[in-house]
Length: 260
Ligand SMILES: CC(C)NC[C@H](O)COc1ccc(S(N)(=O)=O)cc1
Ligand SMILES: [Zn+2]
Image 1 (cartoon, rainbow, N blue to C red):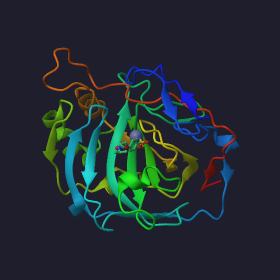
Image 2 (tube, helix red, strand yellow; image 1 turned 180 degrees about the horizontal axis):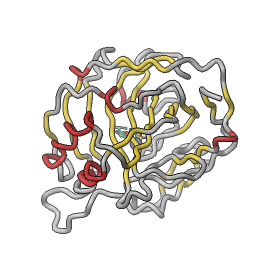
Image 3 (cartoon, protein in one colour; image 1 turned 30 degrees about the vertical axis):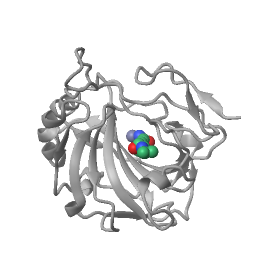
Image 4 (cartoon, rainbow, N blue to C red; image 1 turned 90 degrees about the horizontal axis):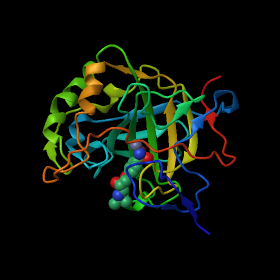
């Protein structure tokens, strides 16, 4: 029987959410000492073409920077992945304060925000919507954000956010290099089998969580919080904050590490 995944704690979703099976849900707490070093894990080899960057939009839950995924121009290979995965979008999750906001945690440590770079298996499927329903369909890179020095690469994105303040607003956004948001060291990561953290919550994701975080300034993150969940027509405007899911049971899964 399918399990009801009650994220009643989450203001965003009304009522129970059905998660198929429900034994490999995300996000999770990564217990560092319980992770298992896997010497067979290869280095991750992202190869992104900034020319495939197309638009940025507010989907009422986060803001997405979308990439043209009709060719293999921006791909992710290596690491735990056997196949070729195409970048389709990246987005973030964040809190109303710097004390919380990430979806994954490391030994219960919360970060103010978390970046997700979403890819789908182009060896096996022909488009994202198909891959999202399949076990080995997606690969998502997670990168923790900490408050510190200003992130020069992020600023181009921060500058355009006011143009997508309301739900369903879209603006053209080109030539953004997603690799500029990756930490210097992408060889050290944890990986585990999980799910989407928003509906449809399908258990289709190979998660690759970077050990090294990136730094953004307090002011840059404050601009994320100036976005709205609500569309321009709605009377009551709601700040887009706390758009993270509560942590899910590990259910016996092993988290592997690429480092000792
Ligand atoms: C099924 C199609 C039509 N819509 C799916 C929708 O785009 C959701 O896609 C996603 C993609 C990524 C994530 S996360 N936070 O796990 O990286 C969550 C939902
Ligand atoms: Zn996400």
